[in-house]
Length: 60
Length: 393
Image (cartoon, rainbow over all chains, first blue to last red; front, side):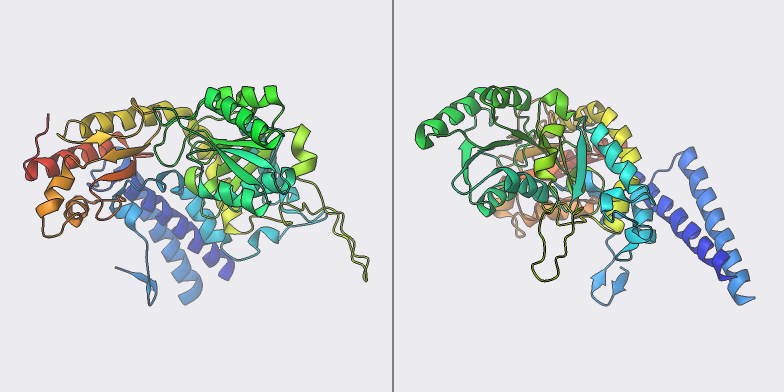
């Protein structure tokens, strides 16, 4: 049970690390192009998915 | 502001600011290296699959052994090791070659750790003077070799020269120096602290016997990390294995390399370096673009009346020494915040990395900035100038 939650914890951290890189690439104005916006959408989706799985595995 | 523990704040300047610190940009991590730190932060994390013969560069999972082989190929050398910083690379080579009283030729812009490495081995540094452009030439190096020979009766044991120095970011004539070293039969150590990992470097093409690089300066890696590489000719000397036997226990540790003190980079530092390697391998191909950005910025910077550049022009590196005595320092003379007015103005525009309070001679580095960021940076300097009545051409 915990194995999947651990896996998803890393997946979420890695996705957020990719978001960190977008901050680095676009600072200090954070003007995002279409591609970057799409990437952020995917990152958020990935993190939400991981959180759902972690919640399901550990709290339900 | 978030904190890791009570008094350790989260470092988010790379996400929030344009960082023009002279020595930080080339060591900024890739996202892959950041992920490696998340997953491999535990102390002996690289040792999970360490099997006989029990040495870091032999570990196959994660593929540390393969990384060492690829690293040597990438540098055009026969063998490479990772070390805790370029300084440990200097130390390994100097310790292997230099004995008490031996002379070692270094640049007049040599990093202090080159001095320390020679001192630790009991040697003496002999500096090559710079020419009028603050460059170390082959001719000056040859002259210094002759001087040392005349004064001491023997040739120097080693020549260590930085390809680009930390003070001006000027290029020194390493190709010619390597040739001269060969003519005299003196081994040549190429200091690539500011080149290996940001621009293409091939040791054999240069004619170097040793290459030393810095992971945290130029290889998108955490500190302390570095590289020392050499040729087949020198590997048995620099990477010699221990011959020591315990007098009571008769223990011996045959596979361990003396100068490496056994294993060097363990855990997250090692894996982060490996994780950045694919990006590093690719990014060196775009060094020309980095130079174009550096020169664009400097051209815009020089449009500000009174601004000067102390480094050679046009720029061949992204690290540049500038002089704003004739511009921003004039404002600092009467400003209530003195030189800190300039730091305040930069910070307000989300720029940092300058030496706080310095408005005369200081250094900056544009490596890794996007074109948008470069243009923003140039515009910001000009905006500050205009705000204080300094002309911008």
